[in-house]
Length: 435
Image (cartoon, rainbow, N blue to C red; front, top):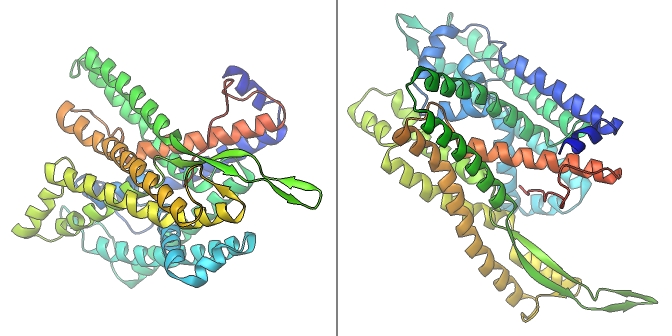
């Protein structure tokens, strides 16, 4: 691994890309600390501390703490992600978008343009909702907003929408001029920024005697084991053997080779837990603003750590794993493409039978992937509730962090190997992730 880091310095283009990525991420972290005008930040922080288990806590995690500070990057990159997911789902429903997605580079650029427009629209809607909502939030003797009214609302919408647009541009610049996927790296930086404070709190608890030393060592070993499990499952896939028939076109011979079709165990990635968390935390968030016994009971029942919440969380994750896999992976199209180029699965008839065979295998391995994602996402509640862990470890955030790290290392590895240098892994290249 040390040789891999040394080889990075020998490739000027790779070194420049890594430097650009680091500088742009620093710009993002600086923007996190620039507050939106018109807000009493101390009063707002007290309010968000009481909303840690609601949708605000989830959004604050993905924004890297920008929501609790109400900075110019409060909305983070979530509107862009939501717009991308909506466009993916609409591609399956609307024939024009499906046709556009199959037109190559030109179609991809058009869909990207639609995604940007959708991001701005979602940012305006969310910004207005947050501005109106903050005007009704009080902390102590007064409101967290100094001067409520349309001037504050318009200024907040413009500020938050501009911040999201800037982050979207920043992510695209990282993807184009840096290393790795820019949008993913922005989320990665926001989540990782919280790790040092959690580690410091743990060390402080061990030093003061509030946490047993053996408990701290066990927690450290558990962290390493969980990260290893995530890496294993994110790289795991089922290989379906595919044989291509030999074809003679003119004087050239095509096909006649054996290959395989890799089906990922976790095809849906981190989308299912994000969807599941948003759906479950939305009622609790609304109920927290309505002072009524019924809404209070709903809010208590849908609090992370409760048995009912965790069971619903697991059920939604499994459902969205199957749903998103069905949306993004079509066995019929895969079987038709194989048949078109003379490919077939040994022992299976091409066409409909092959599609049914692929769908059967995908259904089985998706169940394993859904259970794995559910266990990782329920882990933080177990650690906090049962073992009094002083910080949030595991869950959607850890899945994103490990996945993005694997993707980035794989891209660095590709740059090094392309220029005939050894990468980080001497026994073989790291397989990239999809989605």
